[in-house]
Structures are given as structure tokens and as C-alpha cells.
Image (cartoon, rainbow, N blue to C red; front, side):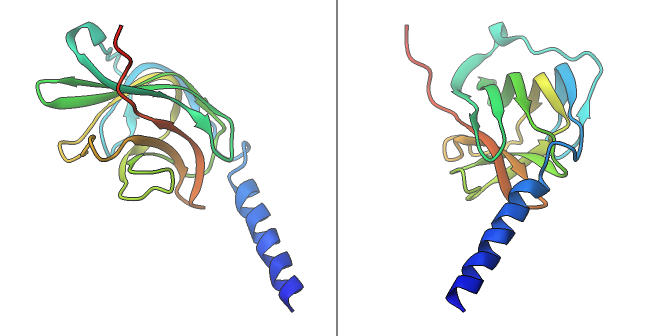
Length: 159
């Protein structure tokens, strides 16, 4: 009986990993798109000028259950925070979201947006983002609770 339960658990684990497969939902390459929290990514040619902002923290994306790469940088200006994605890429999935969380298990997370793009884009964070507590940017498959990849935001090294 114990072997039977182990086999069932293994089959379920494999099903979850393959359920968020690359053939699900295509991600669209984007360049300098702005996405509002909780909304969809929108075009309009919006650009982000880092020269007018203060770099607070940054991180490099690591793989979760799918290849994920690129960087995330958190900027601040006048009490507002902006999360900038550079050269970002991950596999497509059925229900991918961008979360800001305390850890890679999505503890105390907030959803920033539905992920629709790869490349370079930015998100304006909500006022209640609590960036001092939430240091993990997660690419999360909401439908199957699977971590595609993550970036830990850390204070940049001083020159």
C-alpha cells in the first residue's frame, strides 16, 4: 500500500511539472512596455528613464521548473517604486503571473500582473507593495502553483 501511494504521488508531481508546458500560452516579446498592477500589459510606447530614478535593489532570474533568465531592477522616485525587467525570458505557461513575495514559496505575496511578455518592460508597483519585506520576484503558474523562476532583489554593490 505504501508503494502504491508513493507511485501516485510521483505521477501527480510529474503531471504538475508537465501541465505548465511550453505549448500552452505563447509569450509575446515586448520592448519598453508598461503594465499597471493587477492589469494587463499595455503598449503605447511608454519608456522608462533610469537616470531620473534611484536604483534600490536588483536581481538575476534563476530557473524554477522552467528555464527563466534576465534581470529585475527596483527603482524609486518620489516614494513610488518601479520594477524593471531586462532581457527577460521564460517558457510559456497557461496562467503565468508576476508576484512579489517574501520567499520562493510565494509566502505573503502580492500579484503585480499577468505575465504576457518577454524582453524589456516595467511595472509600477502599488503603494502597499512592502518592498522591504518582499524581496523575491516570482514567475508563478497560478493554475498549478508552480514556480517557473525567481529573482532575489538585493541592494547593489557600491562602486
